[in-house]
Length: 302
Ligand SMILES: Nc1nc2c(c(=O)[nH]1)N[C@H]1C(S)=C(S)[C@@H](COP(=O)(O)O)O[C@H]1N2
Ligand SMILES: [Mo]
Image (cartoon, rainbow, N blue to C red; front, side, top):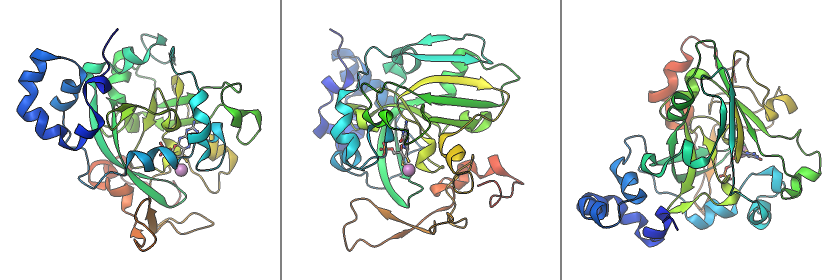
């Protein structure tokens, strides 16, 4: 049996991991080798130092409509999802189309930790310590052809395991898309874990997109198809209500949702008296990503 990094890195070690790894990397390498090490080797300049939400919070307050529309439905219902075996079909304008396993796309020795803010369009937020690989590394692996301008993503359709799909809540499969330069940005990752666990089902196991400068709905879960295309792909929320949910969906405190303000947000776990906090342009990632949108009218391209 192959050891998973979660087998060798107890949860309680998480907070100490970086210091532990600095001190013990060489030792760890010779004793256990393996993924926890690979992880530490790449402690990230791209992470926030804000305090992460607890595993409890991150896994019990979710949006994953395939398992129901309530925030507690995914935790209750997603246990039934079979995530192994799993394959991701990658096609369209790529040199090496095919069916890839999660290990092909996110090998253990390439995993990085990224502690990101997640800002839902509904005006709540969390801080989540993801484990994953840059989306760019996956795209490079399959070879992006010059004509590719967009990347389209699709979630699994399996109503027998995803009770929400027995109803037409959304037009299944859940679909999302990015412009190619957004997809190649170092902040965009495919996550396969969080804290020291493989990704819990309710968070999009076994592999999901995380694009931290955009509203949470862009970060599509349980991905089974990635297609490189020359056209802007269909996106579930945009198609459902284009006046409310745009293709870009960049976090922007100055562009309100038609039915509520986006100027502030409620941090999950802040408590009744925690108050609201100001929402930051591009969710606090403006220094890294604003140049992607230079010259664009962000109120029009919401
Ligand atoms: N397939 C799929 N992906 C999805 C969703 C969904 O309903 N289905 N919800 C989105 C929304 S609105 C948010 S805020 C994030 C929530 O991610 P989390 O539950 O891991 O915090 O997932 C996004 N990805
Ligand atoms: Mo969301």
